[in-house]
Image (tube, rainbow, N blue to C red; front, top):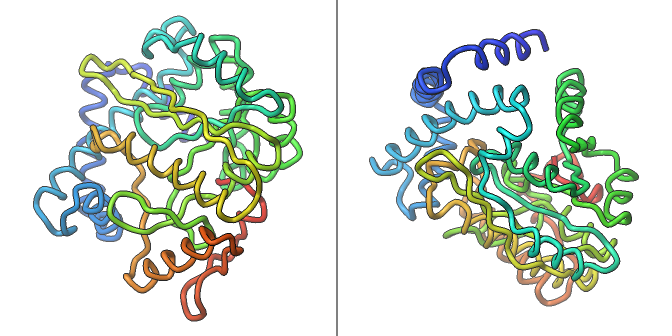
Length: 324
């Protein structure tokens, strides 16, 4: 916690441009000297480009992404200490009429905004909250509880609420009050998620968004963000995804639509994507098993889960219905 506060003070004190460049080089260094992280990143960006992970073009893209990540870190540390108007100015104005229509279409539940690690979701959250919308974001409080409390207090100054990912009562309460719930969906591959196609391969995304939407009659609205050449963020809200029921086919269909939006967010500027954990399974056997599970769900059968002999995660976030 002390280290985070010290880094935050230092990064908001030093000039943003040169500091971002130095952190970008340091991030690239971690990619070069950390073999496991390098392999994960090459696998991820290989899928995005449709190239083998050892292709030089994949390596160049990964290095650009790590450089951009340095810039993001500086912004992340500086933004909470900027005036609200200055923060909101870093995002192109959101379409208030479109957002009102989304609420009107969800006449019972709330709006579940799904996003990937592209751009800066803290900036986007501040822009949404600035419009007077009740914004709530699910976050992981288990790894660093003191840091979570510190960030929660910061976000409350922007009229945004952080909710621990295991607090189901609060999460369901948000949607029953017809508020906005933000969920990041690209935290890394988990075998207990819902099978989907992402770029050229089978993987999973969390069951949380579709499950919550089905149980609360809420609408899922995927968010796509891109950083423009001048540094400003452009945000696009996709059409709402309704989940008619908790039937397996409905859950798989809705989650596949979220995956399509994730691909749309990454594809135009993949160097702006900074999810550096494995996003796809490690073996062709596991990928084939995901296809088997998806076909079963599309036929209306419950997800049979991984075949015997394949890895299964210890944590059961499908039952919890949320993603860390």
